Length: 199
Image 1 (cartoon, rainbow, N blue to C red):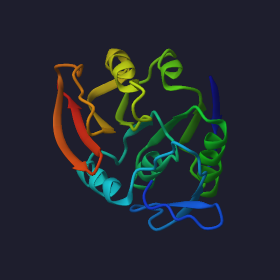
Image 2 (cartoon, rainbow, N blue to C red; image 1 turned 30 degrees about the vertical axis):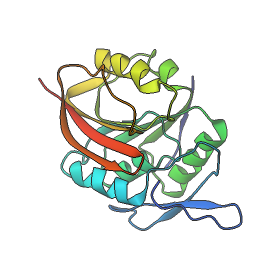
Image 3 (cartoon, one colour; image 1 turned 180 degrees about the vertical axis):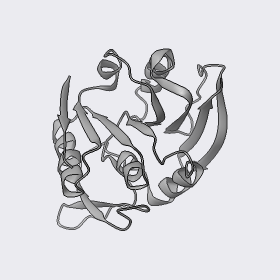
């Protein structure tokens, strides 16, 4: 597992092969940052992110966050912009990881840590409890079913929130009983939901 610390999805605009993500709110509101164009990279749209962070508006400040399938890093960067204490980014693709690191450096965000590894390998490491976890895995690979039990074993702080994006036809049949659904919406082929761990 390779860890990098930097000093310090959304609308994407393609022009000459370059794409951008826009931070929606918080300290870096309206900042545009480059992201890598890659097949299968599916940044969370502006509209969905705005909804999600409205749901979490009172939970993000001071929170320890995990962006487990980081991709562009849009969810974790948005959390840092809105006052998260720290965010850990986990992403398998090295080029994408390097871009997250560059964006953290551009923002002078010393509270972002990036791991270039896959989610399952990361979850084998010594656990640290997180207050908010973002899960936006590649579709149709069965990854949620693999990571959810591992997260529940030892990675969740008391009353933690878990945000999940999935393809709408997929059903989450193995959620722990003590995860309470707080919010859920559908946007086209995407369903996104927020759960909270009950005491």
